[in-house]
Image (tube, rainbow, N blue to C red):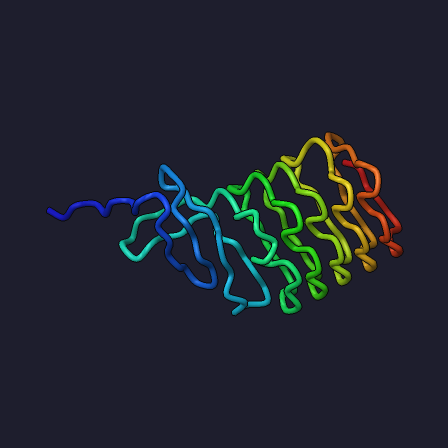
Length: 171
């Protein structure tokens, strides 16, 4: 008989594709680094280490240098297993055109998409409720359409400098 692989120790790191992950607890990991090798970024909801142990990706390290000011990323998909997108995470990603937040994402930090000047539209998942922090989309100068569920409230200056903003649709 073969034994099932055991989880790595908390704090252990491993790489899966373009990402580095750190084991946090109970078969969960935090995304801690990105190697810039892809322009269409899909953060996986589950990853496996070198021993074949599967982990759920539940957080992104609160470090704006992981993705912030990246001039290559054009699209990003954030899985619903990540409840909170930290502040400033994608700030200054000037070529970021498309963001997909899957159901399960519950909150966005302050200025998380500030200065993403190529972003043209944004759809909030139904799972995201509460306040949209100030400066979340500051100076997203191409942002034209925003789709927000009715359980979200917008704080002052969330869309400051969004000079192309034409429509906010509530659903």
